[in-house]
Amino acid sequence: MKYLDIVFVALFCALCALATVPVTAQAFKTWTLVNPLLSSFVKFALLGTFGECLALRLYTGKYCVPGFGLAPKMLMWGVNGVLIAMAFAIFTNGTGNFMQLIGIASSSTPTSLLERCLWAFSVSVTFNLIFSPVFMLFHKLTDTHIVHTGGRLDRFFATTPDPARYFAEINWDIMWGFTFKKAIPFFLIPANTITFMLPPHLRILSAGIIGIGLGLILAAALHKAKRGNAVTA
Image 1: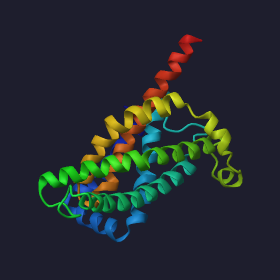
Image 2: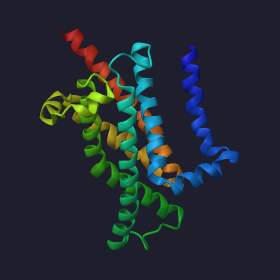
Image 3: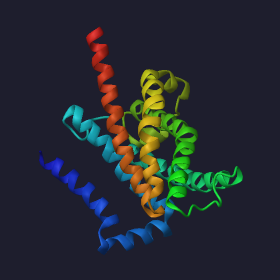
C-alpha cells in the first residue's frame, strides 16, 4: 500500500466517522438536515470522485492521470448529489402516498417493521426503475463531455455538448446488458432498500457509498469487456 492509498483510506474513514462517531454525529445530522442540498452536493462531490479515482487506481495504478478531469468530475458529482437528494424527497414521499392510495399501507408513514421494510423496498424499486436509468444516462453523457474537453473545467463550460455524438459512443452492451439488466435489479434495488431503512440524514451518505461500489463493479465489467475485445482482435 502506497502513501496515497493510506491517505485515501483515511479520508474515506474520516468522512464515515463524522456520521457515526457520537462526538460528531449530532453535528453531522444537524448540518445535513438544515442544508439538505448543499450537504448532498458536498458528499457526492467527495464520494463520487473518490469512487472514480479508486477505480482508476485499480486498473492503472494511479489516482489521477492527464485528462481525467478531477475538477469537472467533482463539480458534476456534486450536481448529481443534488439531483439524487431531490429524487429521494420525491420518491420517499410519493411512494408512501401511492401505497396508501392502493391500500397496501394503512398510512403514508410506515410504523411497524414489516411496513418499513415493504415501504423501503417499494421506494427502492420505483426510484431505481424510474429515476436511475435516466440519471445514469445523464451521468454518462456529462462524463463523455469531460473526456471530449480534455478534462479541463474551462473547456467543459466553453464547449457546446454534442449529445447525439455522445449517445453514439455509449457502450450499450455495458449500459443495457449489464447496468440496466443486472446492476439495477440485483445490486441497486437491494442496496438502496437498506438505504431507505436508514434515518433520512444518513441516506445520501449511504447512496454515495453504494455509488462507489457500483462504480467499481462497472469499471470491472468495462475492463473485462475491453480485454475480451482485445483477445478477439
